Length: 126
Image (cartoon, rainbow, N blue to C red):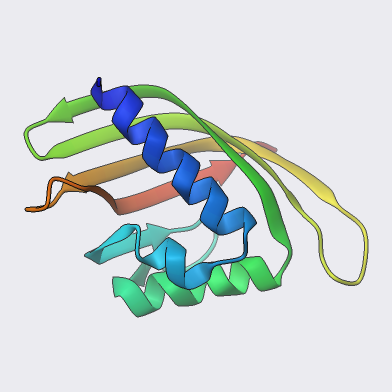
């Protein structure tokens, strides 16, 4: 299996956890030192910071996320992924906003050979 196929498989799990509103499950996909770097917001570090960020995003109505890895490069126990993301923001009080953007993820392979998100940054197109 190629590195792009391995990372794509992890992306499908990420989509499943996010669209299933499982913030704890999402946090478990990151390294213990993992960080999300969302647009227009501070950095969120570590398992609890990552979980808290994703829980807040889910509570705001983030859903229907789909990831499309365009480039994946492996360098030892690190992989760099660049891709496109689509989704929607559907707040509980109604209305919906379609989202499209790009992302860059730095993955780390652990001693168990599992790939986990280490740094996760994205932005949405205007």
